[in-house]
Image (tube, rainbow, N blue to C red):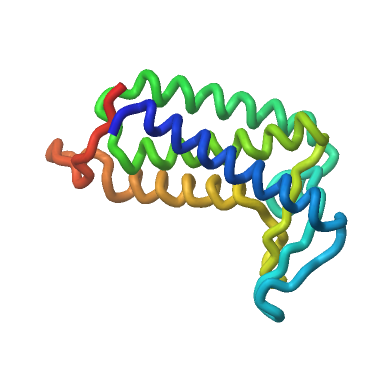
Length: 161
C-alpha cells in the first residue's frame, strides 16, 4: 500500500462525513430526531461546540487549532515514516480524515454537526467514528504489531511513499 492511498482514505472519510452532515442539514431541523430503527437508532440533528461528549464547550477555537496541529503532525508522520505498516497507516489516515471532517465544521460553523443517535450514548458523527477506529487500530498496532525485542514484527504489510 502506498502513502497516497492513505491520503485517499482520509479524503474519503472527510467526503463521507461532510456529505452525511450536509444531508442532515438540509433534511432535518436541528434538535429534531427521526427514528431509523424505533427504540434503537435515530437521526438526531445537534450542534456540538465542544469535543468528545460535548466536553470543553467554551474552547471551540482551541479545539480547532488543536485539530489543525494534529492533522499537520499526522501528515508529517505519514511522509517521514519509512516502512509503515498497513495497519499503522490506516489508523493515521482515519485519524486525519476524522479530525479534518470535524475541523471543517468548526471553521465553517463554529461547531460540529452530530447526528448518529443510539440513545444510550452521546450523539456523534462519521468523523467521530473514524477517530475512534483510528485510535483503536493505533492502540492495537502499538500493543501487538510493534517490533519486539527479537526484532520481528507481527504485521508485515508496509506502506511506501
